[in-house]
Length: 130
Image (cartoon, rainbow, N blue to C red; front, side, top):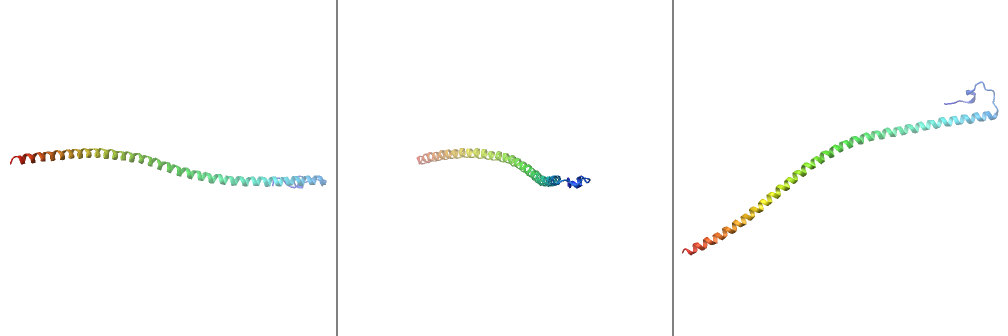
């Protein structure tokens, strides 16, 4: 306790008038209220300190999770770049193969046409020999 009764503060004080006793009681009440207010403030400060510590723990946890997720995102991005390049290579190969296949089909069609024409010509020549 920060103070005491007026008799404790001034043990040699003579019996005071009623007004002085009233002022001493009022001062003692103020003293008790001040002590209680200080104690309440300390409790609120401790509660605030507990909340700060909890939030700091949460912050550290989230920072670790964020670091893990950031690393994972970087690996995924690198993987996507490699896979996109591979897919583009597939697309190029498919396109080139299809183009070559179309040339083969055209050549086959031309060859078939020439072969049929020559077959007709040979047949006509063969029939004319008799």
